[in-house]
Image 1 (cartoon, rainbow, N blue to C red):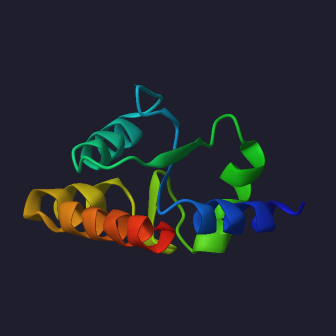
Image 2 (image 1 turned 45 degrees about the vertical axis):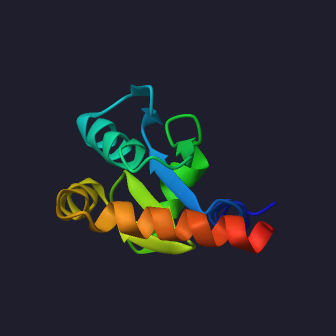
Length: 111
């Protein structure tokens, strides 16, 4: 499968998806650590992809997303942004609302 197709499938199949360096419990950079803390603080399950274990995704996602850096948060198929944007939204309560609404809609769609 083409790597862009893989990325599209990951985004389509996961309501809340964080592309990051490392894992939420063992982040490999400060930006990924702060981003995963913010997403975990929203209280919903989320998927993640460790781009250090997936060099093809690391190389191709910035082109696909038109976003040059990691981490990247995708909610309901839309790019939310990187670490700074996530933290700013979290501090305003916007990230919690966005994630909770997306998770609730995904659960309702599955029912």
